[in-house]
Length: 110
Image (cartoon, rainbow, N blue to C red; front, side):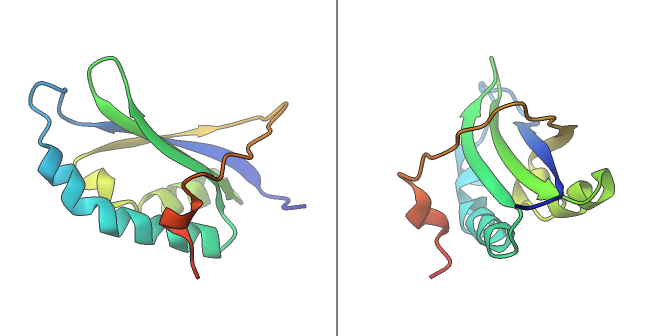
């Protein structure tokens, strides 16, 4: 069992939906996938996905990290930080059953 803590990296676009430029996001997706693959290969990635807030695009990545500083270091690798902001939250997990693998091929390292 991995002994590091779990952190939630919560990304939010700096622009609201009305002025959000989808192309700026889409152009970064290949780099985002590479960052996620690296997290997975290094044993840090727990889960990831996208969605949105009430009026902003956003995403969530759950990671294992040794400290808040380590979580920040890992978070800094996301190209989405160029068009938004990532907040880091320590996640004191009481229960988790993350078995959703339908899009795993998008971040497969093989």
